[in-house]
Image (cartoon, rainbow, N blue to C red; front, side, top):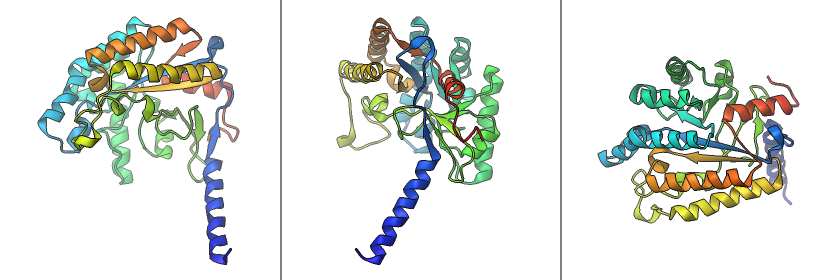
Length: 296
């Protein structure tokens, strides 16, 4: 082995060690009432914001608009009918575009969390601060509750400064875990999801102008089977976790609402599931297994 190759391997090992030091799994969550699995139903209430950023054509914008006019209301009704407390990740601009829907979600007891100001995180630090501050202020002003969770790539230091406890993005694990900045500070709880449990990956016909080969339109019953198996795997393991990512303009369609209705009913019948908000899961993890290096 050459000296150059040995040096590269040492650098890779050091980088892996630094990255591992940032990550701390929650290994024994002990969910309330002996539940075998915690289930977070989450909805990304994007409406047409991402499509505006992508300069999508009017027909695509209209699909997003369906989420605000119809889809979100159907999801709220579905969750309420099953007494499921969901988390609605909501961009700040949605408070201006669909205030009645955001307020209805909050009044039904669902968590309204951050999803950026207009579905992007600016690279410029001051503009990032402006966006997150505006989004946080808008959500709190409308619902009366300050958000403590986000589905975004906002920097940990800024999130902690503004009082955030958790983020829900990435797939570094199937379980909740703590994640720190590279310097070891600004720890956040991460509640991961995976694109295998994301409705847009299955029902993404004409998804943001993608080419024909990338289109997907799968039978809802097939998705029900896949998500049911994912639930069973976590249930049988015990102490499991499942974060199901929905979009009102996708899962708000009638056939998919029917599929979700059957899925939740089947989960209820199986028993042993804790249906809660992401905030409740994050606070439970903090209370039962706080980070070893402290909440700094």
